[in-house]
Every structure is written in C-alpha cells, then in structure tokens.
View 1: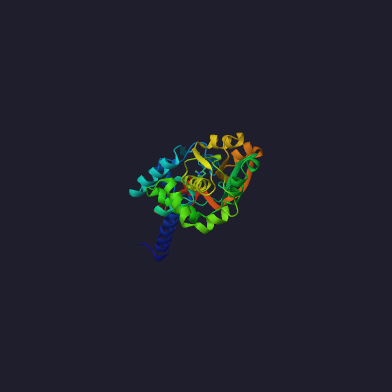
View 2: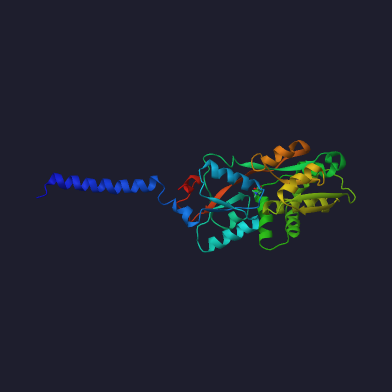
Length: 298
Ligand code: PBE
C-alpha cells in the first residue's frame, strides 16, 4: 500500500522532472534553435563587398554560428525576399540597416548584438576627392554643409518606394524644405555649368541622398552634375583615384572601415551628413522567440 510519504516523493519527482524538462528546453535554446531549421540556417544578405556582408561574416564567427550560411543578394533582392516571407508570415533572418523604408512598411526588429560586432550606431559621411576644395569651392562648401535627418531621408525614400522617379522625389523634397536647403547654399554664388560627378551604390538610403545633392547642385548652384550608380568597391576606388568628385555614402566608422583603411589617406572626409544610423541582423516582429543573435545558436 502506498503511504503518504511515497506519494509525496513521487509527486515531487514528477514536478522535478517536468521542471527539468522546461529548463533543459530553455537552457539549450530548445525553441530558438528551431529558427535555424526553419530558415535552413540561411541569412538573407545584400550586395557583395558591402559592409554588412563583411560584418555578418564576422558575426557568424563571433557568435559561433558555423552551421549558418550568409547568402549574397542585393538591396532590392533582400527586400523582395523579406516581402515574400512577411506576406506569408514565414520566418526569415536578414541583414538590415536604417534609415530604410522597410522599417516603415513592416514590423521588424533588430536582433540584439551583445558582442557589438556591428558596432554602435554610426554616421554617414560625405567624402570629397583630394583637390576638390580648390577646383570646385562652391560645390565643396555646399557638400561640407550638407546634413539632414533620417526623417528627411525617409520622406524621399518612401516617395521613391511608392513609385516616384528618384529625381522627382528629390525635387519634391527640396521644394518642401526651402529653409533647410537655404542653409546649405546661403551666400554661395552659382557657377556656370561646371561639370561635377557623384557616385553611389544602389542602396535606397543613398539613392535618396545622392539625388537630393545632385538636384541642389544642378538647380541651385548651376552645375552640370551627374550621379553614377556603381558597386561599392568602384565607388571607393573612384573617389580615391579622383575619377569622381564626391560621394555622400560612406558609412563610418564601422561599416566601411575596410575601405577607409585602404583609401582614407587619399580622401577628404567632410564629416557626417547624417548621424545615428544603424545596421545589423533583423527578423520580423512575429518571430517572437528570436531577439538576439545569440538566439540563432543551436
Ligand atoms: N548598407 C547600406 C551599406 C551601407 C548602406 C548598410 C547595405 C553597407 O552595408 O555597406
């Protein structure tokens, strides 16, 4: 016959077992390690050579994610894959940066990065070729003053995303922000059709900023300015070689640190045109159990 003591022991054993069961699950990341399986251990990446690809390769090492693969894509390819997954509420782990319209369109969250592989929030810098100050002092002074906020950039990005031509979106923004544009060009005497070359990579953020800068150079300062779309390597090489006059697309000090290390001495850094920009790994908010890069570990 079972006495009270025995029953108590059995009951507490049962509780202990179920508790251990729970903690074992949480401790080994029982639920979260499923993330890897769900997404085939794939991280949706962006353009080869970009800072985010380099930093994410580093994150795989820093966080012991050797079973994960970082897939190359492009900024447009990444957002297309995100859109597809999001509509079906499927899991996806992807590289992200802000400002970007994806954070307006979708409910997303950056994964915590306790090892700071992606660094602290950083800046986007304007870079001129050596000699620009003497050759094109008006453009140089405007570029030196050019700075805006992520809300400003967001307005242009969202218009482009909604189908407006980049030039038209830039023109609209300039028309709607006369006071700010006036600060950039105050006292500058327009030139008479001097040619000027900007270059940029097809990141939505830089499509917006480069078009605004080009528009001001053309419409307010009298330049014949063009904006060349290139890959990231040629963008940095072109400005270092002096083939291009300026870029407004340098993410520093972390994201483009390798390019800066290689070319920095042959460049004129005009400082930040935007502060507090960010990049990292992200997931849709509906992936409730995944909140840190550490949650990707199996
Ligand atoms: N990005 C957008 C770039 C900088 C701007 C974050 C994709 C990069 O990773 O180099």
